[in-house]
Length: 314
Image (tube, rainbow, N blue to C red; front, side, top):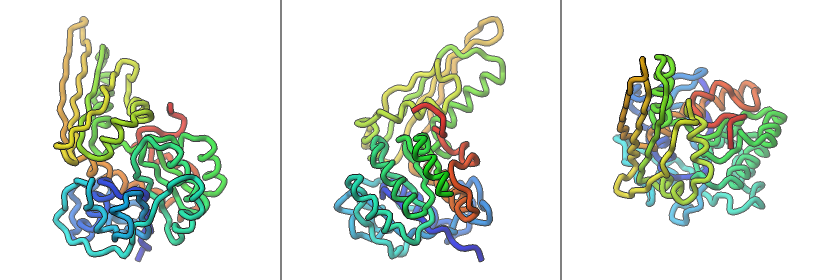
């Protein structure tokens, strides 16, 4: 029997809630609804054990991970599954860079650190990556803050033989994925793009944070889009009543044969944390497989699941 992947999480928000609950659901039911890759290098969706969790919310500290994922401001719904205690108490995350060694020590026994804290804290993201490197753990950056795009960090992970995966998730079926697919389709069919825009509204704490700290997110979203020079991104909108839903509006204006006009409008509504979990489950297994195989540095096979790969704009 294959050894389960031992995962630590930094950030106990909605994305972690969706991941923790989803793994329990698939382990109990065995169904394949909403799964991109049932098995990756011998690892199934249920072959994940959480061994450590870090957060800064006082309400979550000391709570079992399976309890903490339901505490406010988290608002991802409860899935229809039993969620027994994980035996993993949430411990205090990094307050400043002087605590890297403390976090590294707490990672003992983990194989992968999933960094799922809010975007907009680049120094914190780099500090967690450094803790993972010191602990000999693979690192996944789900945020728009540059870690894999930081040449020094990437070089240190390569030298240590540790996988570094990032930056920023391309959600399982989110705005960037749909928008880019439509833009590519236009180009493939010989249409000329005139203009395009997207509007994103959400009700999670991550959306609230991104509205207040949008500095790295806009560029990361542009990195994921074809024809970015003609694409505009409206500022993100935080609407608490949307809960864990994200609502996106896309518009594309183009010209076809003879310069005739083509106009396309799309509305997309998804549970944003589900889109993250559907990608994180694959990134975790890719990182663990690479770690066990002695492959360090950036994993090119992860590129389709990310917005901002090494070398893209910061």
